Length: 245
Image (cartoon, rainbow, N blue to C red; front, top):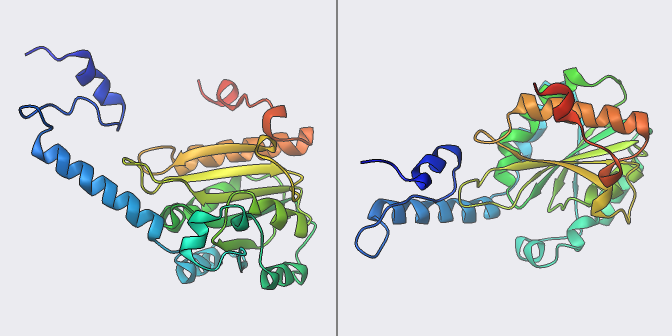
């Protein structure tokens, strides 16, 4: 039987299309697949940062790390009060005040976001691909944040007096991507920055952007930010024009 257009499109997406029918309903195996995907997405939200392994993996890259936490104290508040997840608690502020490695070019931050499992899997592997591509030498300790949102990178970058803040964070789980990680980069990070000041690379995962591709684009964006002294909507992103043939 000749395939319709939906079956042809199915080759190019993980979206739930061309599922077929069993009477007036979906086939049983598709219903079970949906339930499994929904369960994995819920699990991703409830997974915690694997802090011990993250610290050990960072050490293997010959880097130091600092563990901090937002003003959130539990998972329920984290999901209900995202604004508080953008601010460090008092103990974390003191840690960064006492950090001797300041005035760097780049601060790299790892935060749980809405899928801690995503950063447990991908964050340090991406950093390992990124480091050889960087053209400068001043890097802050890797900051590991519990209950962090994207904008917490502004306060961290400002406290460390870094030119650029890069946060690797778990993205909101989808029904086909429970462990997708995003990378947000900001030039001149400071409290009060809004989202248009950032550049984002999303869908870093095994079925999305590879570590190598994401690292190449991150290195490109960092170079452009340092050269042009800006980021976000004001920074023209012509990475694809230059590097993808």
